[in-house]
Every structure is written in C-alpha cells, then in structure tokens.
Length: 304
Image (cartoon, rainbow, N blue to C red; front, side, top):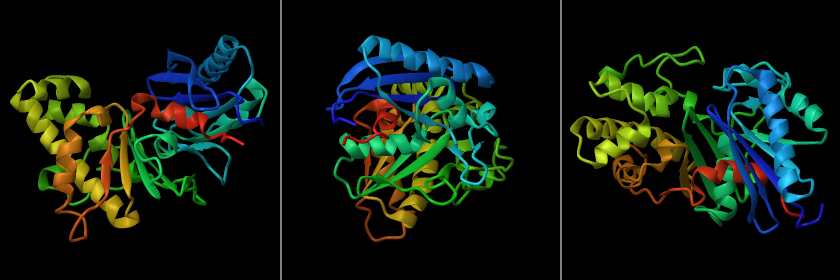
C-alpha cells in the first residue's frame, strides 16, 4: 500500500454515522454524515455500503476502509458483543460488511478509535500511554500504549463503562438498570442519556446534555447541580482508571466530552480519589472534536 493511498474511516454511532476520507497527511478529502437506521441490521449494512461508495465517488478513487463501532467482535464467536446499538449484537457484522463492500475492512471499538486518533495526531500525540473515554450514547474506553492500541484476548480492553460506579452515595444505590443486565454501571450515570435522566430525576426539564450544559453556563441552578453531580461521578470513575493503568493523558470524546467545564472540575475533584500524593495525568479535550472517532477508524490502516 502506498503511503498516500486514501483511507476511509466510518464512525458508526447510535444516532448518526459519519464517514471521512483522509489523504496521506491526514487531510480531509471528503466527509459525509447520515442518520443511523436504528434497530435495522440489514439497513445498517446497506447505508454503510452506500456511504463508502459515495465517498469514493467524491474522491475519485478506491480507499482502505476502517470502521469504528460500538461493542466489539468476539474472538470466541466472531459475532458482535457488548454493543449498546443492540441490533448489532449476535451478528457477523464484519463478515457481512466485507462481503457487501467487497474488500477487507478493519474494525475497532469506537472508543479505541478515539484513543488512536488523539494519540496519533491529536491532543495526546507523543504520549506513552493514552486512555480515550467515550461519553456519548454509551460509555466506552480505549487504551493506546506507545502508539499502538491495546487489544486483550477478550476484546474488552478499556471497557470501563460496565464497571460499577465507584464509591457510590446512598442515593446512587443500586443505580439505574443497564442494557447489559446489571444495575449501577458507569454508563448509566455518565452517558448522555444518563446525564439527561439524572437531570429529570432531580426536577430539571427533559433536555439533552448539550442543553443542560448551556443552561448551567447561563446560571440555571438545577442545571449547575446536575453538572456538579456529573463531574464528581466522572472524577470517581476516572480515578479508578488512573489507579489501574496510570495513563499520561486521558482524552474525553462523545457529545458530553464537549462540555468545557469538565476539564476544569474533574482534575480538581479526582485528586481526592486517586491513590497517589499527586496526579500528573492530563485531562484533554480532543483536538479533532467529534471527528476523532472517524479519524481513528481511518488510522486503523497505518501509513506504510
């Protein structure tokens, strides 16, 4: 593969799908976004095929294809597991999509793609150890060590979202029900829907995370209280990540990761939870913003 061969990355989200074609230097050649056909597996395969074809038509050549997806391909069964886009679970997604598009495709968890993107040419470029945390429709994580994704035998490296919320308060027990079948998972508190549900539970209006953050910035006390609870829960949860792998940089992705106040509050709060006399870990906003995941999917095919 030549070093300047275009690479297509696809970020398969719960509500939208983004595709991007990158040139050899990481420059964007083409970009498209479409709605995710929720609960429709054949429809998902079809729109991904059409998206690749449209991007290639726009750039005028074929390209490698990498896909960032929720969940993972099980090494045991070859089927999707752990996806909060539950219509993918139990399906031979990688084989079906490769057959439809007609070429090899590389797949990784969407949080792995975030971590790889920001470790390659983003906010954590050059850092020895990077943890990428997705805070969106779901909560996931990816780990990059010396520029390479960490992949374990169970394909779940970095899956912090389905650990229990650390040091729970009395009013946080047993926690909301999670689609995985358990209660009180970090995802149920720190996902965008989890933030919105907590705001509603404490007397706020039915709003999404972006609107809650905007109202908090404007001085709304209920929204500010919601974000204060959220920041403390995020600090507790990331403290366990620091205790376990001690990353040099943690990058927050997903829609909730765009809330600026978290980068100020969470490092201040996590100091009391991390098992250390100081915390040198840096919390960073992704340089590539909402496009980090899709760029990381493209980077699954490295330059030769």
